[in-house]
Amino acid sequence: MEKAKVYFTDFRTQLDVSQGVKLQRLCRRAGIQQIDFEGKFVAIKMHFGELGNFSFLRPNYVKAVADLIRELGGKPFLTDCNTLYPGSRKNAIDHLYNAEVNGFNSVTTGCYNIIADGLKGTDDVTVPVPHGEYCQEAYIGRALYDADVLISLSHFKGHEMTGFGGTIKNIGMGGGSRAGKMQQHSDGKPTVDPSLCRGCHKCAKECGSDAITYADGKAVINQALCKGCGRCIGACAFDAISAQNDSAIDSLCAKMAEYTAAICQGKPCFHISLIMDVSPNCDCHGENDAPILPNLGMLASFDPVALDQACADLCLAAEPIRNSQLGDHLAQPGWHHHHDHFLDSNPNTRWKNTLAHGEKIGLGTRSYELIKL
Image 1 (cartoon, rainbow, N blue to C red):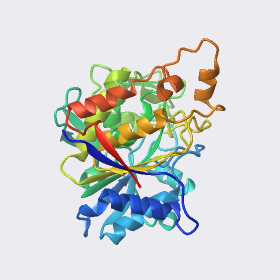
Image 2: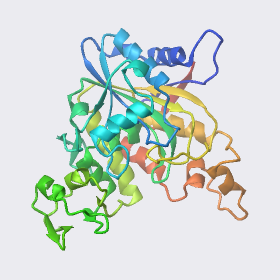
Image 3: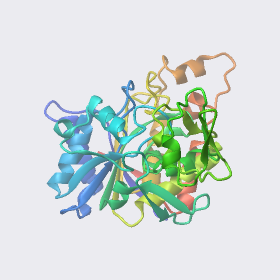
Image 4: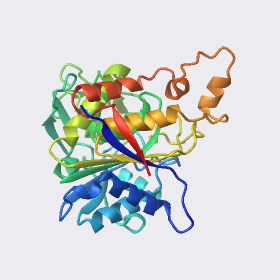
């Protein structure tokens, strides 16, 4: 396979050129205009950031991308799927409020927000996974499936489970409905915390498997009947139901790549990543620790594997910030140096597995040419 082209520009700029203009120029140089946008619904897949987290991408960057898409004839909308865990993005009402509070609205970005998997995370479409080894089918948010074009706009940062969060995580994990996230994130099925259950029976009404009964006024999930769809998690207003087991890291990384392949198949896709505010953990946290690396730049490519690999390589070559989680680890006497900033920040991660599996199933290539603007 020939090398993929990845385009890069740093955050240096002239007095009369904004970062938004630089981002638009980067996208044009990378060939975004080759996509036929005319009259097409264009999903800009991104992360709105959990409430209390300040490291998510600024709406200004989103507006630059949305304005460019409209200029090319498209109809952009911002989208993400609901979360599997309890939090401020668990259902569409809270999720949209979260987006508004964090600054994403029609005035700041020039387009509307649509939660891809609906009110309770159950509005999904089942699609085959091309060359899937871990997943034969993927459950993805309907709005992502219905979109004519997919633009991924990713905040490249560290992650406590997958090493980093970039394009593949933004699309694969972020594009999965609640059932999709269950399939990727958990080898088990939901369980009930009796201390939080109010006995309201909403979960039982949502269950399509008749797997939920009540004992002493508390919900009980029959694991033999449960299909792991996660509908009960979305139905519970008291955060009493959650997934009980995380997948092994290796399989989680592979599943994300397979979900990305399923979501991207059959439609034009273009990918953008910004390496800035590189927090050690995911934007799904209700807080963000200090960046572990300096702001490095903006990248764009048609190849999601090459883009993530290029972002990772730039990060690995950067000087760690001393007053950070990574800097603290490296300064510890006797610290086992992995000579890998992601592993030294979160030692139990396996980020290379995501890229290796993505390349294996034909999602893209890790071999790339970095074209600097």
